[in-house]
Amino acid sequence: MEPISTPRVSCRHLDSFIGKNVLVVGQVIQLRGETALIETEGQLTCLLNREAHLTPGNFAQVIGKVNPDLSVKVLNSLDLGANIDANGVQSVIDVTHRYPNLFVFQG
Image (cartoon, rainbow, N blue to C red):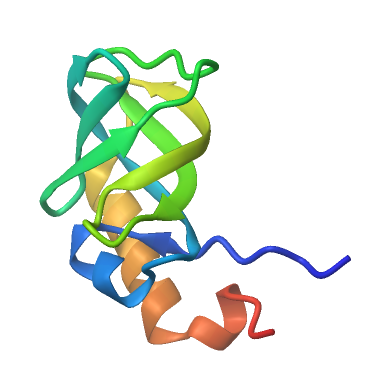
């Protein structure tokens, strides 16, 4: 079985990953029914699955597939709590896009 690539992205990268799996870390701004609004260099709409248990104000890690409307269909999510260094998260995203061969499976 081939590995599944889940590059770390923020809102500014989504249009390059339509139809692909990505990993997003951001702060949960709002929960509304089966959707969450997450701040990650912009506001991202996440279409949650039944296993998602996120808390507004906390940070979350989301693995999901990017839809054509740039929303993300959540496959897996994890509540990371409130004590996250958002600048550190963004630095990791920047490095992974500067050196993609080190971080992303090129299949």
